[in-house]
Image 1 (tube, rainbow, N blue to C red):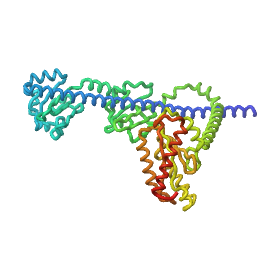
Image 2: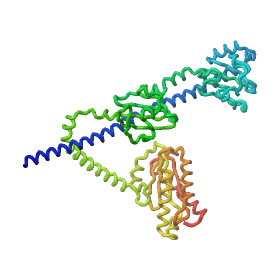
Image 3: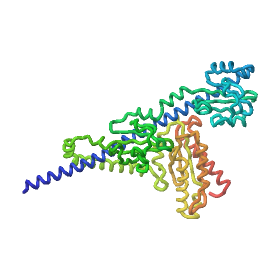
Length: 472
């Protein structure tokens, strides 16, 4: 009987271990699928964004170049008036300037000459493409260059730049087929980008247009041109959030699916469940026997280490934080100020509340605490992003700015606005005197010399305040 109980207990332990192993494997697989999918999502989005940025930068550089060419042609025609109506000469100029077309527009916006006579008589009203340049008629100081656009008559991919000549009697337009740009656009097409993405067997990437949901690129080229709904990826059934994965069926296979959507693309990454289920049964039995013990040990050790770490961080935070304002305290100030280097660029601000004693005497210490906390909040709202704030005394504060010191005037103005707009429960308004010193003002002997100079300026500011407003 005892032997039987031992066998039953052993079997029960093995079954529990295997069930635990199965759940852990499922959890790990979900995590791995999430991480893998997120990496692929990030990579696809990064490459697509980089390509779009590269394309935009190339277009801008081409626009600048083409405008320069249009202005150069304008100078040539102004210098040689006899070529204005000479098609052959204009064609030679076009060849010389490495451009495809030259068009001369009159002040009414009609083409009256150029390198291609077939366009004579066209105007800014002859189509949407050429109509882009209508603003030229209203502003003779304007120069314009168009993005890659099919021209009105031939639907050929062209870029056109236009400028007024020197005396404002005509407009010179040049047209160029941006072959390098078109080649790069073809190479960087969504279909090419996605096709070049390395993926494991069982993984798939799909990129669709955000508006039409038509697939523009996919690791399975057979899906290109279809809509997401047609392949089982309806957005109604998907969570458009890269922080979670959804289970769907694609081509009859159950997959984990992650989606990210921006203003241009919908990117979907799927991972077949079978991708993570290729381990053997033998491995499960071998690992299963030790999994429970290992998990318990690791969990215990991890929780102990984490607890000690949290306690240590809490102790450090408490020892360096002012209890009332949650700013850094005097101890943190003394530690940090010793780390400052006079060779670096930073700003030391000495700050002190005005009228704290009067508030305490008139309304009680609750009002005084309200003022101190309000001043600290205004400082945090204005300076936290650029440095550290310390409460070094009752109503005395120090702010050390180490980031973006060149924006100090804007930062200081922000603080003044916060203070001016403050109103509390016990006190209607608040005033803070402060003085500041740049570490780069002169060659200081020590950081403490900087602090003394800031204190002096702060007291001068406080003196001016009481002279103007009276009281102490």
